[in-house]
Image (cartoon, rainbow, N blue to C red; front, side, top):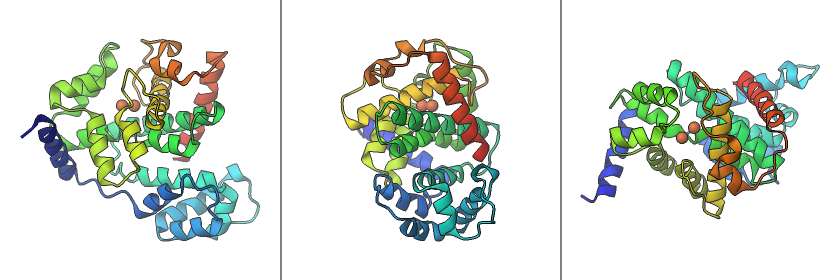
Length: 284
Ligand SMILES: [Fe+2]
Ligand SMILES: [Fe+2]
């Protein structure tokens, strides 16, 4: 068997073994609507209404003090109109992704915080610097390390050892250690899993490339650079990590320079991103 085929076979076995449920139906339909700016409240509520947990969560959110609504919201269409169409799309995807972390132990908690952080940062910079569709950036950020969840749950090797070693050694990258221990890394696993879940090729490619050290001038290349830079920002802020990772100044990153963004005051920028992430963390 060719090496590449053997690697895929091992990954497919691993995915099968961990019984990650299919990505929820509602989320898949929402993914198709991500780029559609003309979607109506009615059509979105129709998609969401099939999933009672998601519908209930949206109604609960619409009633939260953040939206300051006086009369109790009980109807899904009303809830969507309060939260806003674009936010609802992101919320449904996040609630769906959250369901993957069923056991929710210490590792899940840290990784979930990391993924919410990278999603929020990717969305914020895409919007702020007009880089990419902000919803697509959010999804790519949210799922970029999904391969780690599979590796952790498979128990093939104690994945905790990878995290501990990487967290305590600034010069060690997780993909390098994973390649040594497993023969593949979390980007390979994500590519296989998201392919099985029928994700759009753009998101699959961008996630697969998020640890590149050279970025190509394509949509997937640009999206992978957004995720890569957001990943470093979140690690710099020590979100989902035991200690911050600050071995490389953010301005020196290949992804930062590739994206050609101008940040005059890095401290202000980091404060703004941190505030946004803390807000997202409070919701979920
Ligand atoms: Fe990663
Ligand atoms: Fe990451």
